[in-house]
Image 1: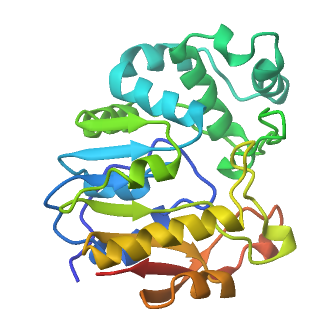
Image 2: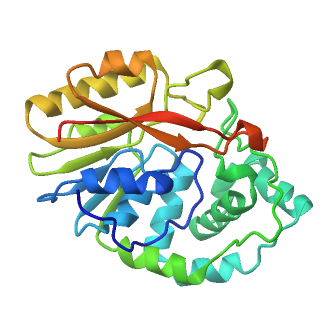
Image 3: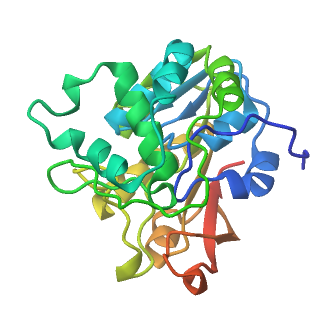
Length: 276
């Protein structure tokens, strides 16, 4: 296995993000002959660790996609806007409810939307992204000693790494149906909940349930038949073992910090699924 190199740090925190698991993931990624493709990019920790020459990053979350595009294309102006944001509960709540105004977030220009997104991400509870059935962001204020809202060095490093990246907002099937033979696909979908209290699938107002998990598995079995290389992460759950039977499945421990109480932040198994 190859050693993890010094990599660019993601500019977002992300509940369920893969930064802590990079020592397990990175050595399993092959030499990429075509494109690096990530249909559920989240904070894109794996992408930033690889810094591939050609990439396609995608997510269904329109605010996340807009934010990545602004970091790629307008990072200097973004940093200027972020200088106006500060850590305060009342201010946080004012910024959070902008998606409830008439016209919603479309009343803001793309750069201001990106600044809002980063601010809420850096100062909200545990980097969680969650919306209600109306699509309104509803994560509570996070309690930190001195949260860093904007790290100019990190944002500019991410800006540089994103220069050759295609960034889109499609359903995952629209991305996976365009994968070519030499591409490598890394997939980190919303996890199937391992218990009723761990259901954090409301990543967008549509959700990601059993049907979506099954459709995703069908694509990966097809890729396996066509010798298209992939690596996927998911929860250690009987359904996931069933859906991916016949593929390589490795169980690894992961410490998750979504729980508000420290005693609830325990190591739980996750799965790495591949045809490598």
